[in-house]
Length: 600
Figure 1 (cartoon, rainbow, N blue to C red):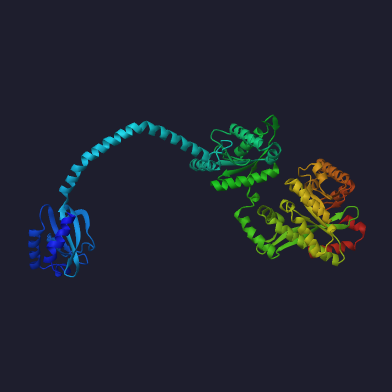
Figure 2 (tube, helix red, strand yellow):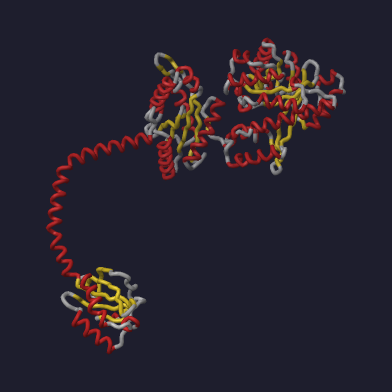
């Protein structure tokens, strides 16, 4: 067919056609001449018809006169074929470019009935297809047992891969990804039934000590035993997962309110009290538990896990299961917005220092003041430390904040000396400060910068701060002591440090926590604790400071017990630098008996 179309275009039509035959639709007289030409020379066999197209693709002539004048197709630049309907019949269409004279005039199309062509193709193809089909069936039947074995094995491998992707390799518990799916499923069901869901996060206390003491193999055995025990403490509808390290999590669709969640948490905590046997050794563990509830504390997976983590962190301080509370969330959007503002506040010196005097009970003299930072926020007013210090500790801003406070306090200390006053100043350190090996160098630089005697500087740390890493803390504190700086243990009595550890630290001062001092008038147990702490401090050669002194009776009782120094609202509230100077000068001009009475 293609050869026939090319032959007609080159040999038959080349001499008979004119350039005008392609320029515009032919007139009636010329159309009759072309009809005669195509009937006698071209339309033979199964040929249905022929068409001429101008350079723009318009039909200038066709054996089907109804097509003349229509804009049909683009001109052919080489021979083309297609199968489509022509004049109501399915046809094989061959398009050939035609040259008339010196140039290319248009396109010639030959339309062949496709029916006979398709019938011939089917007749030739069916036997071949039958043979191929029989061969394929035979091949399939011979390979079917092998394919079934391979398929079964592949399915097993896929199931194993999926299990490994969603489960913890050590304990076999669901991992973080599967745990998130289970929370999603529990939330969807709770939304339909209008019920609640609780998410619990558990973190083992002092697991690092077990790993370091008994080795990682024993640590792994403990985690495996712990996982099995946790599975016995939950209901069938609950899911326990290992999120990584020594952190586990539980989602409980049935414990959807505060009471049920706390009961579940207490059951888990009590269930972990029984010792674990590891390679002949008995190991006891405790876990900190944080709880977040749907819908009270969040309505999506991310919020519930994060809020349970916040509650767990708070539970490490209280040593009991804790529900999420926004006031403990240092990463809420509001507080996170303060991070950037706090950085700016340090740069713009918006932080101000107030000082609370410490008075000798025996003489009424003021030998030291405690530096307490405040934030003079341009929009929120004067912010207390509790509103931004925890945020600074959790985001790493505590280091530049501590440096800022110490720099300002030592600058004021140098200024007081120029006015004839010589109180020392104490500055609080956080765990991040204490574990920074560069801290002693920074302190030495600031003392030199302001020309302050190192013995006038006292740094205060809490028992909890020391416990973070006792060995590193001891090294940093000894380097500070070598500079001549004094060391105070703040909030003594609320932590869990041992006396042996306390004895190894270069401590100069113990500060009794205000919670014991405030109630010692009305609670005999608190009075005993205060008296015992004073005796302990003196037996260790330390000076003792009582915080939270708010009444004359408390002052008198502390003096009776032999406490060295007192601090609290009865003596003075924290004062700005200028007011403190006036306060110190006024006290310096008073007689000692009046100073000791501390009236007003």
